[in-house]
Amino acid sequence: MHPQVHEAAVFSVPDERLGEEVGAAIYADIALDEDALRRFLSEHLAKFEVPRYIVRLSQPLSRTPSGKIFKREIRLAALAQIEAGGSATATL
Image (tube, rainbow, N blue to C red; front, side):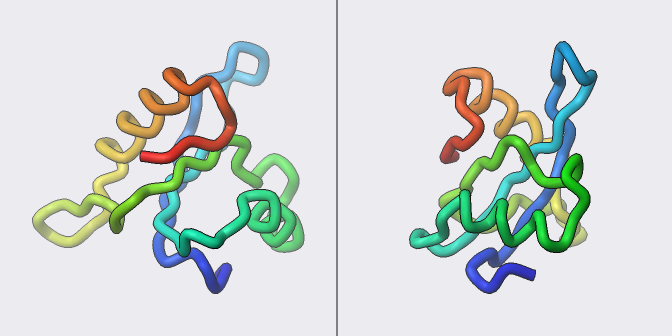
């Protein structure tokens, strides 16, 4: 729903304390501020649904030959980026 986000996919991120956290891969305008996005999402989602990890993509989301979002590929690439960077926000 955010006007600067063109595409998004959410996925689970393993967490030692909670079991899982919410992660999101987004293809958005360069000017998008992640803190502003989280504030926007907190107005529309429950606190536990707002992504702790946001990975910005430099191109549209990967899709299968049938046109569906290829979530498994996106999740694996995002998890690798999160683990390598160790931050809540990363760029692919």
